[in-house]
Figure (tube, one colour):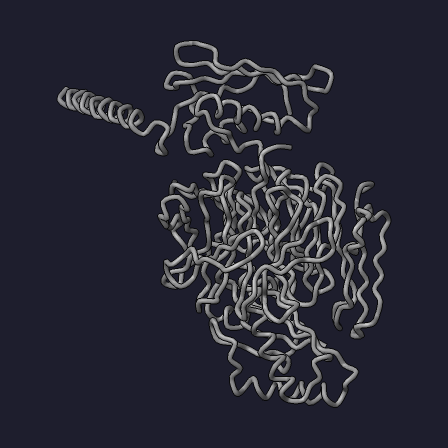
Length: 206
Length: 401
């Protein structure tokens, strides 16, 4: 791929100050006269040690047919999912990164933190106050119903609800980052109430 | 002998029933001609010559897809006929010719193209649009493109394909989600949300070079980009001040200007041709659409039907706003006519979302949870586009390139 514009992002673990490497064979990126930085990566969090983004010029870009796409339902020539745990192997699901003691679940259309979740938040808040050098990323998620971008906003509301609770428990705001994935990274791929309940969540990531 | 007599009778009876049915079909055809139903009968004959693409079948599929034509295998029942040739030759690889004739034999179009092999499909779409424009006096969509997000194992793809879903090219591949592609008015750039680095940022990518530029990477949400009609500014959503607000960014500048101010969610802004901006806000307690002037100001509420209207998309002439509408727990695509204030639900509902107007101002593409479909603004039948990879978040490119 001669014209491949390749951006290799090696995201460092944990520390916010860690710098990231944005390298490539040929970035081909616009020199921005305005000083707005090119696409760069932020430090990631544990478990996401390396991320890759590739862009291609239209006209010379690879066909989607050359990739192993994931199709949960019909609609034309599709590649059926062949074995393995779909929830773990497919982009768009979080792959069960966070363990149960780091997930806060929510009711439909709600940002209320139920008593059971309070214990989970408390335990995490305790380790954060004990280790002020540690940064956590609170990742808000919704189920798939409704508008995608509006769900980004709802997911952030959930993450902020956990953030506020942590701050009330004594965690420094500087230790908390918030990001919402909306419905883009479901934990369960189904289109039923059970999956929806698993997807309405905030993951506490270190 | 008796048996034979009976069979003859039956045959006569059957024949009369068939001819009656045919006559009925003929009448029915005349009535529904051009307004949904069966459409205008047009014979698209196989193109002569050896070409690696079946041009006639692409043209027939395009015309059928408009809902206004009923392609026929022979000229006997057709009002119009398309005949053509596609053979090696010319300076670029292939010469493609076609003629459109009326039932009375009059020639309506007679054109030829000199193209390389990889443009045969594009030429077929061009022929479809030329025929469509000649017979309906409206611009066709066959030669336009769509962008959408597809899902793979361990990857998200930003894809640009022909309007019929063919020729799907991956212009971006990422391990993290990609969202909300939006075409610049000249069709040369796409703005979208990327979660590379596990955080949200808004990227503008040049479609034809692949060059990317991050135009916003503020803390929190960087979402829902939309272009100004002149292509020089973007509106998008940032939550850097604590909750989602609408911002406008001059692409020649570094600093976005905030246009809204409320403690609620303000997001999904789109520009109208007159410079005003429509967006989703739950400032009234439920998500509804509001409108502000080019520089912000006091929002005017536009939707009052039900408790959920979000994700507006505006027709190029500014007359219609399509949106996601919820009632009874199901999500639909609905449209508001800004001229008559009429509100209409267009789809049968379920998980419908992410509507985007085609440049003809009449067709809307949207996701339905299974894939991507189109529906017409006057409530015509919904039609699924065959796309791989759980396609979603489709955006229809403007006319042109």
